[in-house]
Amino acid sequence: MEVIYNLMPGLKTFRSYKKEWLPKDFAAGLSVAAIALPVSIAYAGLAGFPPEIGLYSAILPMTVFAFFTSSKQLVVGPDSATCIMVATILIPFAALGAGAQYQACILLSFLAGVLCILGGVFRLGFLADFLSKPILTGYLNGLALSIIISQAGKIFGYRIISGGFFKVLVNFLSRLSESNIVILMIGISVMVFLVVCKKISHKIPAPLIASAGGAAAVYFLGLQNYGVFVLGPVPGGLPSLNIPHIDFNEISQLLPGALSLVLISYCSGMLTDKSFAMKSGYDVDGNQEFIGFGAANIASAFSGGFVVSGADSRTAVSASMGGKTSLTSIIAAAVLLVIILFLSAPLAYLPNAALAGIVIVSAFGLFNFPFLKKLYKINKKEFALSVFTSLAVMTVGVLEGVLIAIGLALAGLLAKAAKPADAILGRVPNSESYQNIDILETEVQTPGILIYRFESALVFFNADYFKSRVRELISKAEQKPALLLLDMGSVNLIDVTGNDYLEDLIDELNSKGIKVAFARSKKRLLEMIEKSGIAEKIGRKHVYLSVREGVEDYLKNENPS
Image (tube, rainbow, N blue to C red; front, top):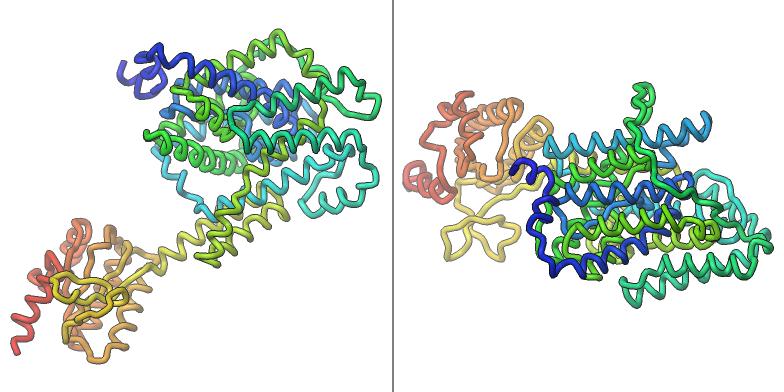
């Protein structure tokens, strides 16, 4: 039974559930449903599918995720960033017809779910920190602008072409004369209402109120006669549960998109998850959340939905209403189920402009201007990287922007790893400790010794840099050192290439009359230098436990004067 509880932490929570939690979970569930209903419908349109598909993507995935998550508050469902990525990935299938595109959507959900579960099984939860915050922020900022411009035509009452951000922007501006004032008033009213409510309280189900108000206005004022476009009939009833059709040709086409979709949705979802967990004083397991996202996406595929992710707005509502456990999600799903079974008829009068307004306001929530301002102040290079990522998303496309963001992340990681930080150490005055001489107000360097610390693993892509840095520092020394004392406390890994470069450096320095010694070596390094013969070459007695021990031994034995 413990194995099942470990796989499905929600079961353990429900087993020890306290009845005094129920009123708050119930209230939070109702509020989440009030937000999820219009948002799921709006995001379905963003992904290019009928409104009921958005509801199918919310009901079963929310329920399943509640059993698999380690979070008490995170709510999953359709997400603006995920939906526009889904739409982009499925573009090649559009030419085959709506049916083929929809089947590819279901297969994409299933594939994303399998990849997420594999991520959890192989403990890849660290991927939540894979994309640096500047790059992820840049990506989401660019995505937000792309979403806003894609919905702008619906606010003004005309259809604009699809394409890159600037192409769509030019088309939008060139057709402003075609604006429908009634549609424009609906869209602007909805957006203003949502922004005001958000500033007042997260507890207000603003999207539901705005949608209900828009539908009522259409119905009672006959706004369709004024050219107002509406959602149209929404089929009621339960979604049919089907196993996705597995087509290996389609899988090969969808796999790159699915991988990028999983990476982005997991990283952004975990940002939401961790931030709310931190505020509430509990921890989440990144690997378990990977499995939870996977189970939710497979459930979405089985119920005919698209890829889902962590939903920050619905999670915020759950937290603000005092939701205690993931039962909140199950209650919200049950409410949505009742609506789609018995109350779907009024949804037909929802004005498209209101739904577009909901999407646009949600997209504004993706912006992180305070972080950009902070980034500009403290690191202009990373600020430029963030802006470049935004421009990539806006110009070359959403999916290509993901690949560029991943490429930039890898390039940045390799650049830092290839030329890691290092330091020359000196004794702290009135102390026996040794620190980087650049951060000491005054320092004492021991005559005849160069103490060098390399603050990284010593492997194939930075071994040459390590060797060249040591040469450079020795050549710049005012007096040629008799001993190079290597503080290896930060070298937690060394490979064969690193070992060979280290051995070559020792031979080179020995030929110049400079001895080499090690201090604070980790187990892996000790094993490598022992097997390769380096320890014997420098003398095992010159492998010290501390920098202080190495300095004292040199002063005592190597430099008796």
